[in-house]
Image (cartoon, rainbow, N blue to C red; front, side, top):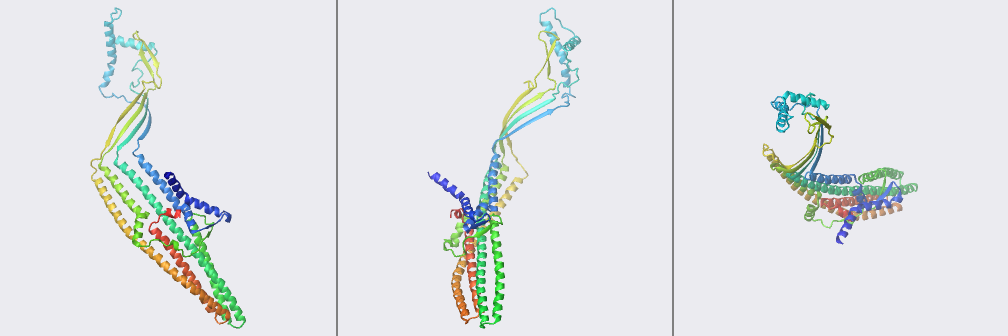
Length: 530
């Protein structure tokens, strides 16, 4: 039962980003095909599914899995099949230039001696020994009577076989191969490196998407502040115009306010353009079409629940040592270098393998006519043509054994390569120590950024209250004729600056929190569950 619950939980965790993306798309279906409205966390989930780097990372994991299977292939049985056909156009006499040829020249004499011995011992008075030349003449006549060419009279090489076939299967099984077994460990470690790299890429994408979302949101709200400022300045221009008509203010005050309004409207146009470009950049990181209209849901405001639970540098550093995937990559690289050293060391030892070979060999002459004597009749011959697959032409061959290969001396090359591996391991260990120190500094900097941004937020919240009171006071004085448009515009500018400073502080706070989570290596899976 527990196992089934675990499987359901695991499946839910893996499918959650896809479910969230599907839900977001469904919610925005009525808004138009080219428009989507998302929050920052929805943007993160879309990126985890759709970001180009994430997709490439998944493909790299697939490659790493296949490399493990490839490494295992080196210790599995190796089966090879082969086939060969040779057509001998002209075959040399294997006995040319040696005295062995004389042996075959005496074969006729041996047959004659056997014939005479049979004639003397068969007890038949009608048979008697005959001279050698008569024996050869009668034998040749028997061949001619049978319509056959006597041996040696056709000028062909009696040892030639025109067609040669060789079909075989060989099986080799590694019994001991240190390099192959170490390569399997190396492939597994390489996959672990890929997994750490993928996790780091996820964390980078999450941090980048959040920063881009917050930057786009900041640009949008900065444009909103300027739009509000433009609206207030238009009211000021209108009030100034009426005051000029009433003779309370000079024409100079009206013209100054109108010029300031035009400049502010220009700034608003630029701010709106920057906000639009920031959203386009976010779409790129989400892997969405640049033509898709993205509406950002949410506002730049202080969220106390985002404040990290633990901002102690030492405790955060311990968390980072356990969670940072880039540190895991460095550890994995050291392990991989150790595997490489083991592979090099395997050169000191032999490789042992077992093999089995099975072959079916055929030597088939083009002329498969076979001459044989007629039983009971001297100097009478008959012939028959054998089939292409006749057993006399085809023979199986089977062999098994062990093979050992040992490079006993290689001019100290293996020893020098092992020492180079040792140096590379020490270099990687130095990199690890430097990386740990850099991580501590990164965490400390992230913590300071969070705390600094929080203090700025608290300061600007009080400042905005004061700026709003100051603006309302200057606005009332202008309407009563006691104040000037310049005072009102200065108060409005101070209010805008206070709001922009607050937005910038909130933006920096959110970015600093995201950077802190990245610095401690907060797993992306936590973000998915939340």
